[in-house]
Image (cartoon, rainbow, N blue to C red; front, side, top):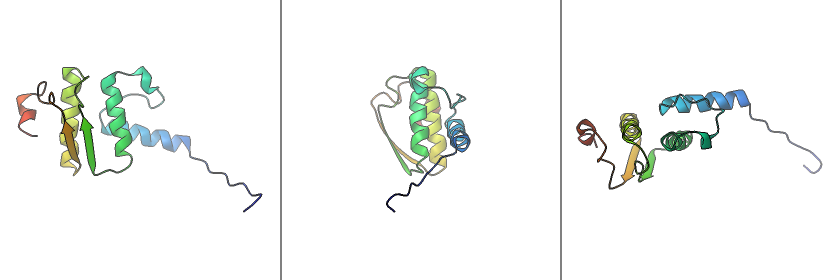
Length: 110
């Protein structure tokens, strides 16, 4: 194949559509064009989970997932993990604070 150039292209519209679907799945209503550095830490963690889900994983391992989150973001993350559990995704949470901010209803589901 010497001398031949193969051009590969990824359709940006398709890529942004996929990103939007994954952001919706994790509960983010952000524009997929926005830079991750310009959103809150809690939302950044959800972006990381969305990126991982794009790889069709069966297991999430989260180390101190709620350590830098406020109460609302912690609750949202834990609810998301419960929803993903219902869809067959296993999550391992490594944290000594995960249940501190969780509601009693959530504590009984983990």
